[in-house]
Image (cartoon, rainbow, N blue to C red):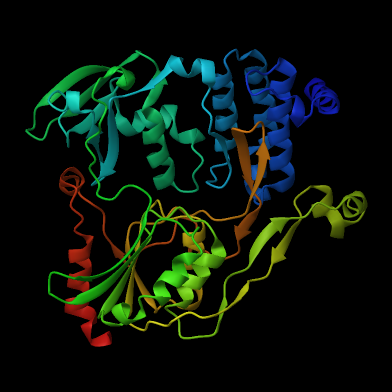
Length: 453
């Protein structure tokens, strides 16, 4: 009760305009934690998850942390962990402007780790250290603990991802950031099978040559369209979209119709597509469907209605409003095709755990209504889509709360959308930068599906 009274008091006297971009008073720190708690309580789409995790108790347990924290970056970390417990990729805390005067207190490790074959490998390393931490070395332990055990203890529980694969990827990224010059102990196995123990520091900013060895090809966000030949000399057209935020996607495709028609099959690469506009994604999908209208899928969102909540104290039919668990069903959208070409070739769609949001909206519609139109190749997707409510703490700092969840048949989306053919890069591909998924697709097409082209 003491904390709830404090929350109401602060809400009366603290507004967003009072929040300084440079520092926060104790009252302001409590206010923003309380604001997040309230926004999640009222607007997060999954009420059953909130009940299961006992969201109110978690809020109470975080109050002493924000009251006593001294550094702004540490405060942001607490808020990030708080929202991260929702395990929802469209709900999170974001700091675009850094922590100004505190940035010098943090640094990164001089190497990066990625997963392949169920293990952990050095996927990038600063040029100066490539001899002592060879590219492609397997990371065996961190602080004398198996890597996954260390990540589960320190990072994974507060990562904002819907699926284990996403939380693991984000934990590996977060693992790289720490107190400047602090050392951690690691053991690695080099590609030559040598076992080495090392103490490494969070000190990458101190190196003169900070250029990284880029391992995976084409890692920057981009869109690309090109006519290619596979290893069997079969022409295929390659569409790579790393985001659906460019209205000219459909315009570009219209200009390339003749070239696209030359291909025997099509490859749509969404492995690094982090989403964007659902309308643009739907427009792209309609290029591969022989129809004038497209139905998407229904979803759920929260309903807060004060009058019904009041009636819920005495009338069972309004009980969900009283208990703040009422939801409404949003119908599927109907998209009308306008000035778009149609391509009927066999379609392969490349997916990964970085495929999310609007890209998954496209895939949900495919799997739900047109399961035979495309062949999905790669690894399971992120398992996250929705409409986030955004709140600003200041011009550089904000958080998001997911307000919409897809209403789908069980098994379609809980663990991400599953590929029809599984393909993940081995560590040799990771180190060489080669991408053999196209050879894999060519083999599928040539041996099993050529008759259907």
